[in-house]
Image (cartoon, rainbow over all chains, first blue to last red; front, side, top):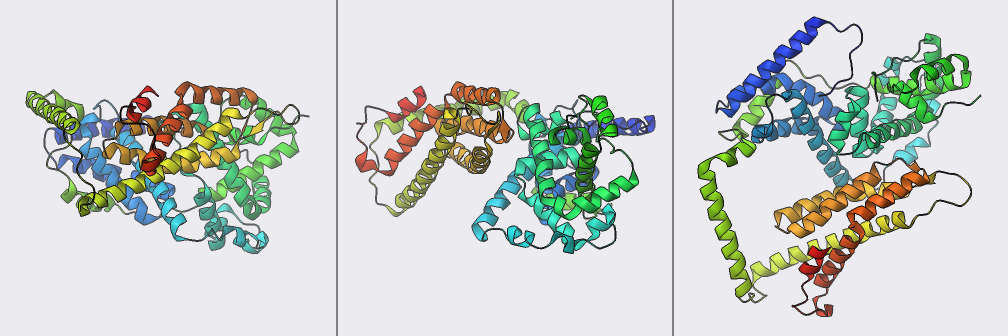
Length: 233
Length: 263
């Protein structure tokens, strides 16, 4: 996948390791295409963790994430001939997983809409936000450890549209370049930028009452400028 | 002092390179903007700590065990497969069958309705016709609203299209489903129209909530360029007539498919 440039700390060893993995991926692809079904196993074992992390963040539940991982590999196997061996298999499988996760999110959303009454989020938001946060100044770790806050974060992510959630996950957590996000969303780069912006804006509106005031204090106390996510958006 | 917008602050936080130094400099001297950035930072930092369930080192092996029985014997070789000479024979045979079926369909009498199998298929088709017709109607309304939107003569320079955008986003899911169904049913013309519609809906859904008059104009041009409103209307009308066959005035010679193809 197109990754943003690494921080200055990245070293040549890591790069060499990545190149070796890529070459070994290419060999495994060729062998699979030549009829050695077991060669595909190397690819599955190497990339499953990465796909699961992406799929879980996109779908928000383990069951769907596992389904996405399995389906992504099945689709990759069925369409392996379309994969140019010069490309990166990890990137290709990642994109297949992201696309299937979008379909799964939409499907899940429709099922939920049919099954349940309107979301109870609005009712729950009537609670005093400060009741949800401990009295002492929280660190982000402690905030996430707070079950109620975690629930709010999960709900806020769920309220995003599937495109917005995809854009946020890929940009913020997975560190993907905007071109990669645009390719998955099948949009232009400027539209993908807008989608990232809209997702952060919506999350902020939903979560600031719970983390904003205390979080700002905490960030200020730390006194550090925020680390940029990368060199380009 | 002119403060930074939320968009600029979020872009800065997410690594946007444009005007990075200028923004950093502004942040050192402007407490209000710095506080605003801290608030964004607080939300994103909290989200950073949302855990992902651990999958142990054996996970890859477990995935393989799950999928291995489902894998076909040979991996799909995509377009390379079509270069094999034996495939050309199969393609030729398939083409001959399709042509023969088409010609036979043109010359044979339609079967009488009323057999149970036919009625199930008819009911299924009718449900699809109603659903797609309804979907096209809703899509047409969203596109019409955008195509006819005009920037306010006075007041804010930005135009809020949040409502249309949300509706477009909602319609996208259904559109994808109908397009796939049309493809499976072999209705290429309907699938094409739905494909065009999907692109336009995606453009709308991915636009900012508030857009400038220039951006609105560009969006309207894109809708116009696709000719999508006309196509949607033609297909919608055709489906409406399918729903009410007794009211359908045009005789068989005035082919609706022809009209759709023209669109």
